[in-house]
Image (cartoon, rainbow, N blue to C red):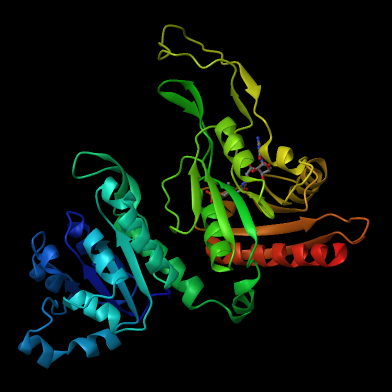
Length: 424
Ligand code: PMT
């Protein structure tokens, strides 16, 4: 059974070329066992016919606020009450602005005002519209009111430009809705008390892979998607922290309240971390940083003129070790991706990098796929210290990465509180 089975979802479709993808999204939600009703704005109807959604969902499509026939069948207040969740995809800049300002001049914005059900939005717009300060402020207001954002993603846009603002693919929206619903709205009661544990803390997080250039068109990298690090960033935000997220090259978006710095190589990630570490109380190094980079990056594309090619690599700086060696260091948390002898390798890294805590994930074999997947399981270790002579270990069982993120932050907050208590 899915987290969306028997759920009633009101799918809001607004004006944008991505509206055609909403038809697929409606089907994907129904595949999960959800009942879907569609509300279209006038803008959406310029791109798609209501009949398409009616045929797909088996339910009449709602388009008018002041249509007596539609009101007689299911009034707008009744429709707002009907929905367990409201998902707007695509969410245009115009709709986000109307929601932020509490406008009720069309059916969709009225429904959003007249509900206390969770609201999810998948923005889609031109990259400059997405980064316009007006949109950024509107999104920040909505996020502060508990609206959950899915995307947008990066890439080629319908207008011919490239950048952030593409609506996520229907399957990505479905997956993010599934994990958010499972985690935020069906979360186990033991997640509730942690909400404020990081208030007034500044958490600095690295996430994703790094890319080490070989020539202008090639690079060395790994399979990290950034999902684990981004989940920790969102959970830390929800727990009241001020969050700075140093991201490698990933196709993920973060809540507008998270200060995000995009980087590419290990060196650029190190620079960004060092530029933001001064005020950090906690540093969580989730990034899969490439251990080596090219000794020399050539300016021109390497030609296939030889049968064999040897690349000379040099060690990259260890970002986590460098932060842990700072005189005024934050509470340092490392990750260890291990294929064998997980505990021994994690303990060795904990000692060698002088960490306060390490989270080890098993990454060998199909059952232990962690890179790029939506789930993880962690073994968390911390060292014995002069003040606390018992080192410790807690296992976080397999769950979606959002849930694992909360469990890990809960442990971190408890450890930090203990250390603060002992040093005061
Ligand atoms: O991004 P996902 O697809 O969700 O996958 C998540 C993950 C598997 C990448 C994540 O859970 C994880 O395990 N990240 C650390 C992976 C890793 O590179 O481990 P490591 O054993 O090589 O490094 C140990 C620690 O040192 C890590 O905290 C790493 O961030 C840090 N490190 C390593 C090398 C380096 N040059 N600088 C570092 O800061």
